Image (cartoon, rainbow, N blue to C red; front, side):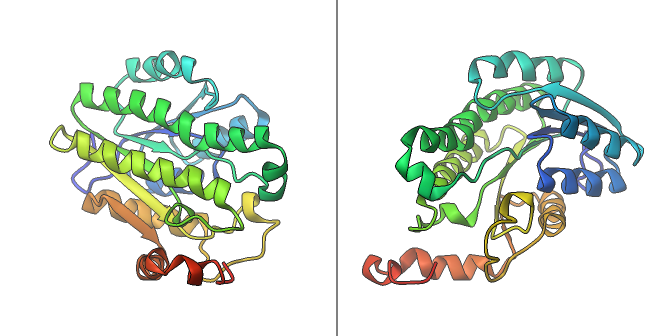
Amino acid sequence: MKDAFGIPQSLLVLGGTSEIALATARRLIARRTRTVWLAGRPSAALEQAAGDLRSLGAEVRTVAFDALDPESHETVLGKVFAEGDIDMVLLAFGILGDQARDEREPAHAVRVAQTNYTGAVSSGLVAARALQTQGHGSLVVLSSVAGERARRSNFIYGSSKAGLDAFAQGLGDALYGTGVHVMVVRPGFVRSRMTAHLTEAPMSTTPEDVATAIELGLRRRTETVWVPGTLRVVMSALRHAPRAVFRRLPV
């Protein structure tokens, strides 16, 4: 169960090598989280991440999880929940893709969509049902401001995040009153390995900043978190800009 301050004692990360997820896990372990499951494709990076978190004093276990294999999600996640209650599930997997290549080779675009949206729908529903069965817990979904309005420079990635964001909001409404809290997190440009090859955007943030915002959102049981918070106003303006104007903006 969460403590009196809303901090989970147990955490399941879907996307166990995500820099944002690991920054969040470190922050929560420093508070009161004691059990962490890292779910991801078996790799040296996943084991390294687990070892790093163990060094902070948490009990950490890894589990093989593939977003692109939805048929396995119920079995894989069912085994985790069978070990005991999970206070928080952090859905943190996703890929950026390569817009130019993905336009030329639709199979790559489909992989972006299947990872970021289809895989999230499958695992998100499985996790939500498990949380509802135990009667408590939070499902935290890493979305993106890119999903607020599709941009020419990354509309394939943005459209997948738009779908994920709408799904998570609807799921939160469906679970309202059940004891399960769904929180959608919308970071702006995050300086990380995934974006290292890109030109940094205004109001960029870091994995640690996102982790801080997630902790605050958990304490407040917030439904939507923007990182940084000023992006809420900026994206509201961009979302309502006329299309003829928007397509001329350097975004």
